[in-house]
Length: 285
Image (tube, rainbow, N blue to C red):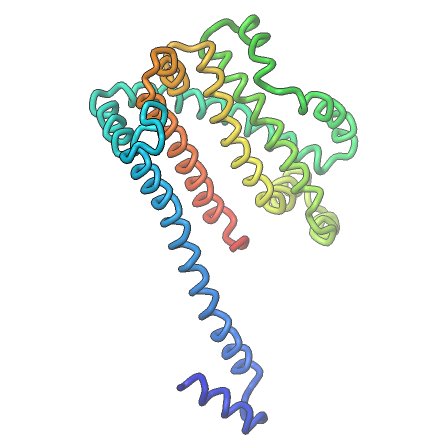
C-alpha cells in the first residue's frame, strides 16, 4: 500500500517528487523480483542434485539399474565414510592436495607475471605468443611420458605436468585482461609519469584481475584433471591411484568414493577462489 501511495503521489504532484525519490522507487520495484528470482535459482540448484540422487537410489533399490555398476548412493556414501574413518582416504587425499597445490603455484605465478608483461609489451608479446600458439594445443598428458623420462617416476614429474597445464590458461587470460583495459586508464598512468613498477602494480594488475581469476579457476579444474591421469600411470598413492587400483580389483564402491572426493574437491576449490575473488576485487560485485 505504501508503494502504491508513493506512486500515486508522484503521478498527482510531479513537482513534489524529486529525482532521487523516483530513482529510489524504481530500484525498490526492481529489487523485489530480482531477489525472488535469486532465491528460486538457489533452491533449484540445491534440489536438482538431490532429486538425481533420489532417483538413482530408487532405481538401484528396485533393480531398474544394475547395482554392480551403479550401487545405491547410500551404499557409496557409507563406504566413503568407512574409508575416511580408517584413514585410507585421508592419506590419498593429502598426497593429491600437496601435488595440486605445488603444481598450481608453479604454473599460476609465472603465468600471471608473464601474462602481465606480454599484455603491456608488444615486443615481448610478439616474441612469446608464437611459441604459446604452437605448444598450447598439444595435450599436456601427451608430454607425461617425456616428463617421466627426464624427471623420473616421482613427485617432480607430477608437479611439472600440472604446472605446464596451468601456466597456459593463466598466461592467456592475464594477457587478455591487460589488453582489454580501457585505454583511458593507461593514458592516465602515462600522463602522471607512472614508473614501470607503479604502472605494473596499480594499472595493469588491478585491471586484469577479473580475467586473472577466470584463468585461475580454469587452471584449477585442469590441475584436477591432470593429476588424476598422472596418478593413474605413475603413482603409488593419491586419489587417482586409489581410483585406478579400485578399478583393477573391480571395487566399484571404492571407485565411486574416489570420484565423489574429486567432485567435492573441485567444488570446494572453486568456492574458495570465488571467495578470494570477491575479497580482492570488491568492485566486480
